[in-house]
Length: 127
Image (cartoon, rainbow, N blue to C red):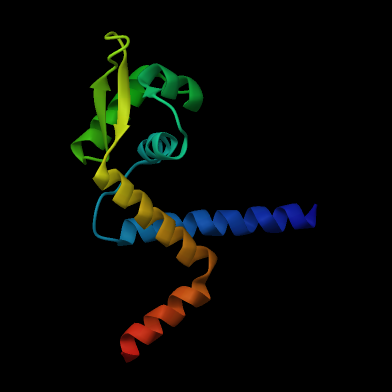
């Protein structure tokens, strides 16, 4: 049990450090729901729809729509009518969203391996 608690504590620490890293950087600041929708669209393959995202995240369709509205405003995702079923709307990734995901990966990596990132910072400051 103690090992599981230790792993949970480490994961919570990574989550905290990641959120703090996202808040501190210049750029977009997403709510938990927006980040959940964003990460689902970028990390899970498939044609994501409002209905599908609502089911997967267990939230209402209007909540997904509001999150997608914000992601669209920030150009992190866009909606497109499904050519196979014109009643359905698909969520698409964007280049800006892919760049944001790379930033998230970098922040997580720095949280998981703080010695590597501080060594890089030290080399940058010295060079």
